Length: 144
Image (cartoon, rainbow, N blue to C red; front, side, top):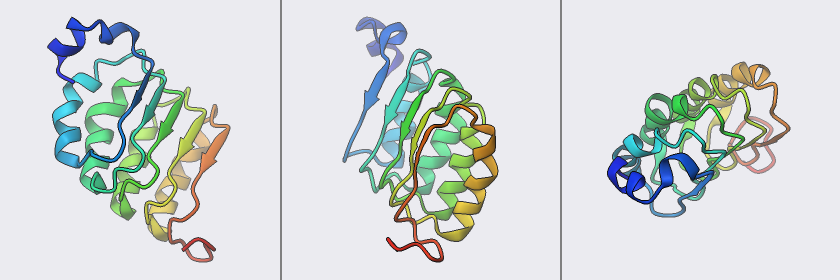
């Protein structure tokens, strides 16, 4: 999603939902990030089922994309291979998402350290109503 492509197709001002499944890795996300940060009207970002995104993709989200998406209401990062390191990046990236109502982080193998990083930011997400987090390999997690 280059800026030129998006502007030519009227996407910069009007795109509210973006879903990219099953093909995205961290390099692709990095390449798309200049265009994605221009989607200031975006309300839903669904990057689920991209297991090759990994911690490097989470860092791209934290530093290059999420800070520009202040209107985001739904974020789905289910099964993106984020691991504990990715959880720390996501936790930092969530801090500015004051309108976020739905967050899906299922099946990313965050383990205890990743869960702790996310637990620190959750109280600041005052609009959050739906949070999905099972299958992340934490101590006592039945979906481990």
